[in-house]
Length: 455
Image (tube, rainbow, N blue to C red; front, side, top):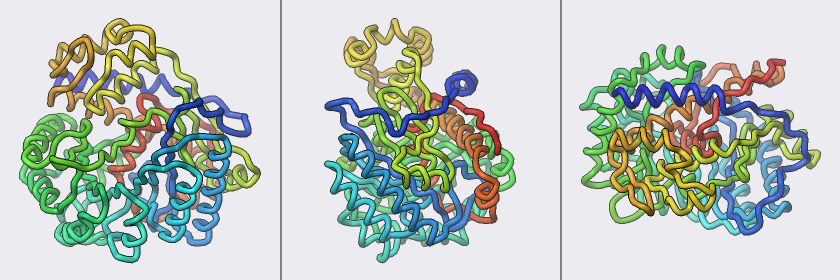
């Protein structure tokens, strides 16, 4: 698809240019804007084993290390509360948030004490859909997201997930048991695997419907340069040429039971909370090693080092070690992307916030979208997307996530030799790949890689 190739090339170049981080030396984050509501993101960077192709900040699980980390995570949360941030929503991602259920529950409970939290989202994995983990979360979590990726046993084996999580049928039965226990149960899926046929994709859709989930997110398979080779060895070489065809296939197959909630998230017709909180919150505070904060159109990046994170928070300092201010044009593009990713952009709000109409502020972007018949509504009030327009947003976001992964891979170059050795030990990641991608979109959106020195 020509428009996808053009978009991918443009976004790839933009990702290489936008992010040039500078050292952040202040002892704490900037003060919150009075009257503004924030989302709180907490990162749990532990997995029982590590995937060789996962770019999220994660370390092999060790109980002693994790207990100390959770304690520091709560200390950082208290620091943010003392600054006066008004956080109304919480998202816990990883890594594997449910790796220590008691610590996770204590962390969520503290967040509810410190902030006026309206809803909590948490990721998990299929093997954690057991009473010992699910039951304590039922009254604490409103949005529960499970990383399934595919129900096809062959694909699960290619991803090295079959032995860890079981067969597609076993995962389906666990989902049926959980369905209805949370206000929103989201199932993360991936499409466009090299060996995936159209029939395999349609079967995945049918099993999603059968699972009883009230929301599903279908992410396109993504490959940043750093993980492209490991992906090729495990699932095959990524080919984006049929991505549009597969996207339209799953949109059509889901249409009798689900409706679009974002460019790649679909909610059961008649209800459900969207798991893509970035639609509602442009500003957020990130807690934990490797977390990002986006505050008043500025990006702040926490240290990726567990040791440095513990030392900084223990001394009462913010773990944010670098930051980036964005030019007005970049800010407009961020709004354009995030609003349309949520399927609708208000032209009046855009002009109120930036002082120009969207046609004057982003003439090239608007011309491209109109030329490709991306808008179903384009009047004086708002923009809404056609199915083709939604796919173009999928392609844009896919390239953004590649840039996010590039950032993380390069940020790890600043780790100590001991942590570098720890990180690249043997293992398989317990991460919820899909929901983490949603988190990544808020963390970096249209920004690209940063070069950090390898110590």
